[in-house]
Image (cartoon, rainbow, N blue to C red; front, top):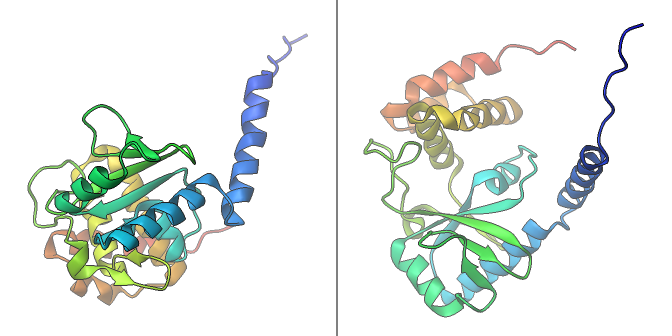
Length: 210
């Protein structure tokens, strides 16, 4: 008789159910990361610090429902320093020694910070840079985001330049598919990323079979 397959450990089973529980809370708008987002946006608004929410939370805002457990923020260097001066030690700590990132100690959520003027992906100079949120962010009643074209531009530049950031290209593919974006949107993007956008647009036209 063939040997019996090894059984799952209790730890692995618990992770499955914990992940499902976290996903349920997230998509109901009641997860730790959403509470942390509301808190930091409220402080940034009160301090009049320019910012834009980017990363997976922005993807959700634009219609791509994707679970995340951390926050990505675009700030200027001056804005980050001002926020740290006012709030470090008062509900926020450095994510790690010397890091730009923060951790919300109340909600136990990591906050990754990208700075105006930095380069996406591999961090090396390229035609696409993280913009100044004061100049480009689109503001709503509850938060500020980058315009969709600028957000996709950053993700494309990241995925093109950094092999370990291929998830960024997959995100763009899914956004194109979900929002049915036109091929002509490429003309609104930096020339550095236009060819990759068109390539992903073509891929998004392939109908998936069940």
